Length: 421
Length: 105
Image 1 (tube, rainbow over the protein chains, first blue to last red):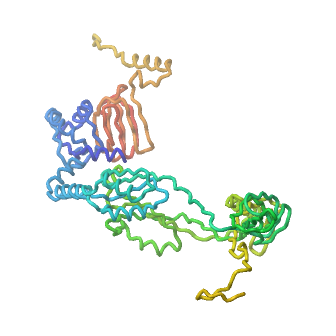
Image 2: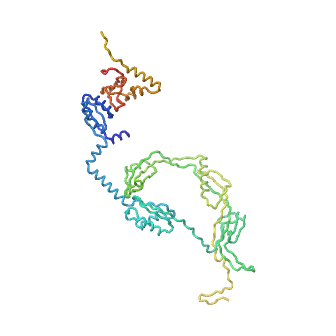
Image 3: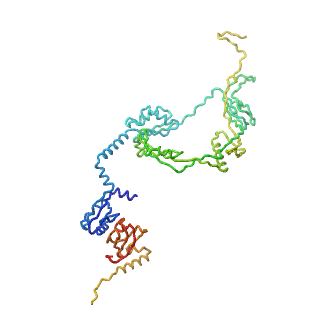
């Protein structure tokens, strides 16, 4: 194969040797390292193939032996190019292709943003559009330094911006500052309450008044640490109340039953091995297919489509608005599979592992016992868990809970006149 | 009648010695003796290395000169698949590979 391609690029001719001493001609060719192949007899003459550059050396041999080599066929790239060069349309097409390529290279065809975490790509692109920077914009009209400054001014949490134009690609790198945590202002008071039924295992009060003790059972919504502090004078009379944000470390223990289930018989996807590749090209939002994709839809009942389409670019510098790629259609059928018990147990344990992985950080679990059982088509794992949870549930302190009632207060009318005693 | 003087042919003796020497050196005979190496691939191909020249070529035979003498390949629709300075490949329907001494054969 490669040999044939190599021959075609070098160029070769089919010759016919006419004369008396043809064998002598061949022997001299052999002596001068002239390679000849596919020699065969035809009507008393010898025909064969010879490289184009060797053909010019046959002149002396032909004169010496009296054998005339006639050219019957010219094959290869040099002849092909020679034929092409006579057609002006080829040059015109080549020239216009260069012009189009040059014209396209004057515009920005890709905006690449990296380093953002808080700000989304769409958000930044919308702002860039407001700054007249968009795909298809002329490269000359983009001032990278000005753009950097504009981004820095707009987004104060962006510490560093770099914009550079590489060919037809605008690369914007940003570094964001760490977002400061919101300062929680403790306005008003909060009770610390039980989020669910359970038993208190540990209790440390920092601010507030403890309402329960360690080892006590509580119900959902019970106040664990009250967010009202009472002030007393020297005679231990209540002077007033103050709402506070109750603070403390309270650990609650409760039991929970969790059930994981998996079907024993499932419809599993099975690829038949039949697949079809369709090559596509997208220019200016229009798709062009090498073959008609609709031809293959009726043959395959169910199929996956795997798209592998990339923007056409030369070394990531010259990015053009052309998408080239391949769509692969893979046919599949559904097959009913009944899993064995061991595989089902493994699946259930995997589900349990995922459940444990995504538990909140303030929860610790302890497995008391587990049970596998069958229920219809399903296989079930029931786990009895004991959960130790740090309480973070709060309830707002209402004003009527802490305000003292003024018994000597006068009831007044709207006009200000006293009504009571 | 006086016998006509002819030069003694040393080539056979020389070839025999070179072949012996190459066998001592555990080499193939074609390395030192430069003898022809013939590969026959079924009935389709015959490849000959270390040939000296082409004596005759027709559809039914190819005559080649080697160091050991004349070599004739008989068959039908014979072609020279390629022909370089060290080897030649004959393709077609091969019927016979004959060693001969006469050029008129």
